[in-house]
Length: 196
Image 1 (cartoon, rainbow, N blue to C red):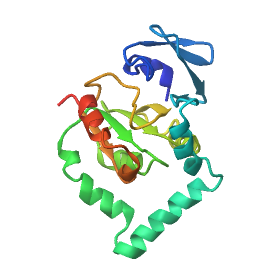
Image 2: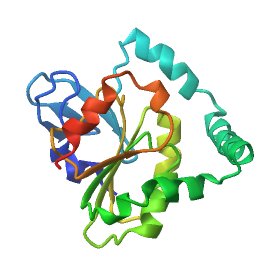
Image 3: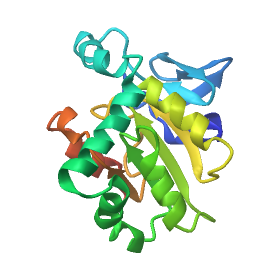
Image 4: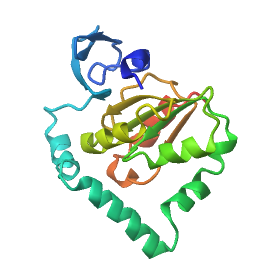
């Protein structure tokens, strides 16, 4: 995984038009000069000055967020008598037929959707990006998949309401769970990113 090799797919989340380039341990927008930290293959696009976002992030900055997420999956299985893996398989069965070559996983969490893609799609010419608002979750995802899932080329921490991608970047944008946290514009943003 090398986020900076796929830097051409990113756009500045502040000015929305600027292309980004690498500079030391961060990337910078050529248009507005906004900078974004890069740490261990993880680009952070979150706006630390956005007070509403900071309130939302409190949930995701808890030390036990990974454990809480795993507990949610256990609750899902016990309550609805279906495993999250089977539910993903049922939901994504049509996705497998689409023959997408570029995929964005929004709200990637610990990477369970990546595991599903890894097990069910031919990865020879596949390019996958993963996004989540939680830096803790994305660090776990990087640890879990770095070096073992070749199609995963870029991972970033960003707000699903302000994704750092140019229009029509992906053949397919997928998401499993958490949509209740997005504002009502996120569905239009997913359409903006999808090239089909």
